Length: 484
Ligand SMILES: *Cc1c(COP(=O)(O)O)cnc(C)c1O
Image 1 (tube, rainbow, N blue to C red):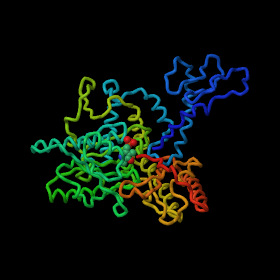
Image 2 (cartoon, rainbow, N blue to C red; image 1 turned 120 degrees about the vertical axis):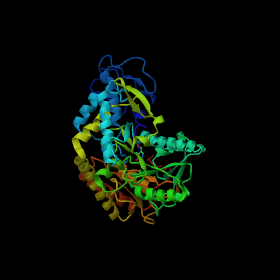
Image 3 (cartoon, helix red, strand yellow; image 1 turned 90 degrees about the vertical axis):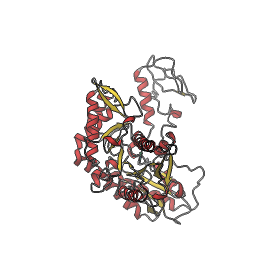
Image 4 (spheres, rainbow, N blue to C red; image 1 turned 45 degrees about the vertical axis):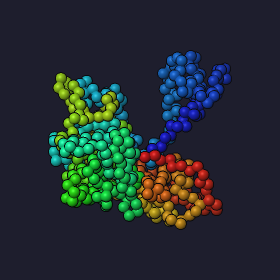
């Protein structure tokens, strides 16, 4: 995601509260680069703040508020950020609930038993949404986001494999995990932090996602599991979970190895149940033992909330679960963090009550309609070729047609669109096809058809401009503004 903060602080004084008529006031603190100097006129107000040091004394709350407020203003307009998957809008009732519950700590199950009960209701609803054989027989938890949820899913796979290997008196030294080369960075972290070898299956023009081909070349007795992604971050495409499971069935028939699947449904986990209810990607596929999602993506909650659910309690090794005291009883927890905000869980519950299945379907369908409109318009532009069309999750990517031009590339287009406020990143595809640069649009709740039509005007205008250039645009120093 974009890091718009990085140069905001260097421009600390850019939006100072200047009161030009007050000529009698001494405007102190013409700041050097290491100072913030908002210019206030009230007696007693600090006008200089060191940038990277704790100020010596206190300031008025209004002053401090205004400074932080003004600096945050430089962050850019989240609604025009078509790079992020993360929700940027909730309704005023959600905002009210959020400010009422900002003080709740999720881990204090004892102090906030109702929030704890609501957390359980939420993951049970999600377990049903993902077709767990029985919501009561499943087990789940909220997390800070998909990254933590994926770590927990991965840890459960690893522990389960270790237990099975130990029971057979075999080595547990070299666990490996099989993933698409287009996985989100959280899986690279998982493998790095927990000493698991990542076996990446490269994506290509022919195999645009992990689809089970050649899987037998990757699986062995040390494989702790396979990750299937519902909504690949690079492109928004679904991986065919059922087909991957069938490939693993065949491997089991041939070798006896029983390899399970964790579905990373960071975005698709909250799209597929509503827009593709007949697609079997979830617990309907026997091999799927756990599924994770980001509630702050298409779950429509403000950042940071995620969910992870295991098919049954037996699929989560019990020695990973800790007990916390809960109203004199015990509450199991499986988490990387201890304290974390509880408000988002209440926001998720609010949305479940407010929207229900039908409301979620309508919101997601509206996003998809806009995504399909945009991809079909982009496909009409001579310069472009679609990689996919936004009919899985409402996300799609395109590339520049080969031989279209030697004057510009998608990074230049991204820059031109930035002039109009749109953040639409261009970036290289992973490993084996890293020569290929694509540009991607994530359609979220709030990108209306109206806005999308304005965006198309801006894209067409930018492409016309670039196509009319008589000399090539410079390419020095071009960097992808997108990190996974
Ligand atoms: C966004 C994303 C993640 C990480 O999710 P966070 O909620 O940002 O931690 C993991 N996997 C996929 C496929 C994603 O799109």
